[in-house]
Image 1: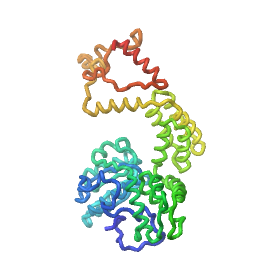
Image 2: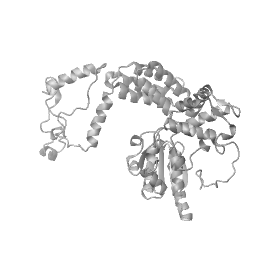
Image 3: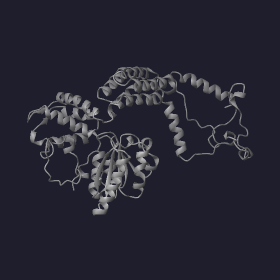
Length: 440
């Protein structure tokens, strides 16, 4: 069985060769590099794949780490027809067609189907829900690929029926091994060209690839296109080829994971010049300006927070302006917001607070709401003591009631701790005053 569908493997190809990354796609789990923690020898998922019983799952990781390849290998080992979907192009109607085709195929020859949904996070709720009953009934195996946290981008019902498999960027050693194999392979790779790496060239390519196998092979292919047979690929050739390749690659819809990550980290580190550069790189590569604006909004709360409460307003205004203006004018409010956010004082107290509170909740500490904080909306509720003992804060002299609002069993718990930068200095002073007024 071919990994690329139901065509016979010996079928002749017409036209230009597929990209190098496609030709070098691993054909077995032993060739699948860089995810040993998930599918290495002896791992539970590998045993399930080899037994043909891996089941439905969500593959979560950055671009170029093997999500599509792993889905193809799962289909191969389970002898399932591989039916790919693009969440950008498909809708509910296509889901129904896939269900009908899977049923017809099973009735005809007893062969099951693996439906692979690339960028499943782009499906809306209705589209995701269309899969649910069919996954529950086992009419096909569903594997979704996503670069975004499935906890936020995939419906809870569908999430509960799929194993989440996080995939990591490939290690430098794995990328180097993959590139060397492609350079030497005479059947699928560039072995017939007789090319070799000069001093530092391979290390440069590996560093620029940032754990992305597809990017590494794309860069190698671009290098080869500028070389004669038998040439030595230099570090300078790698840098030039990579610069050209990354812009084309990102513009073709790779979600700009690396560029937006660099933007976010530069903003967090208060590096104004780098923030403007990475924003320009993303936009020049064809990034949707709204995607960049969303990253600015998230960063405003995650990394600036209450050290400068205006940061979130600036970021949201930039998002709205980008949506209103479109490109190329959207560059201006986005750059303005990026400069503001990079220069703003930094605090991660907001994300630390909500994560700490969420952790307490996830540990099962879901105490009942204290009676005095409940609404007495009916006579029965009033008879049960709802609202009894509640003190309206505005009726007090200082606007702070001596009343416990955390549930019993959590008295004294602290989630938010103000930092010592920017406006949070004043928040810390106010919290100290509130504690004094409440008698704490």
